[in-house]
Amino acid sequence: FVEKANGGNQTVPTLLIVSPSGTESVMTNPSLAQVKQALAA
Image (tube, rainbow, N blue to C red):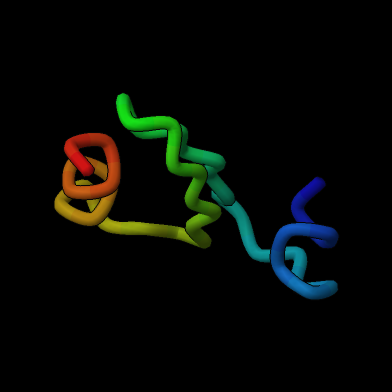
């Protein structure tokens, strides 16, 4: 999953975030603020 989501990059942690509106975001090593923002969107 990590390589597929990041175009071959194996950097972790990789998160798949689904917001309450149903929007999916894949983030590589996000900050806590970025995760909170994605979850609120």
